[in-house]
Image (cartoon, rainbow, N blue to C red):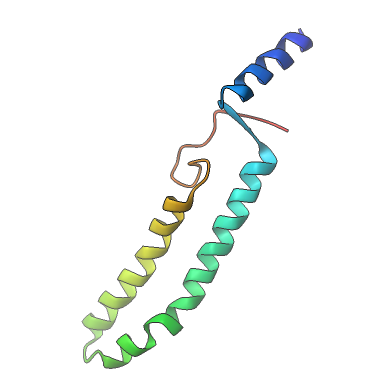
Length: 93
């Protein structure tokens, strides 16, 4: 039974149906670090544009664009599709 399960997992892994937990963890760690960096960079990247704005609505628009851009970049860089919602069905270590 155990040998059959191991063989099944090996075949699934070779077919790209499973990924190692460590690979997913590494990808998620990179995604979180990237999101943190992008969010922390907002003040520096948008200070001049915000200073030039005369209205609160204009500032809000700039900030909304800046904040919404970060998740889009994370989805684009996703290696396994986990960030975009396509989590692997099974994992092996």
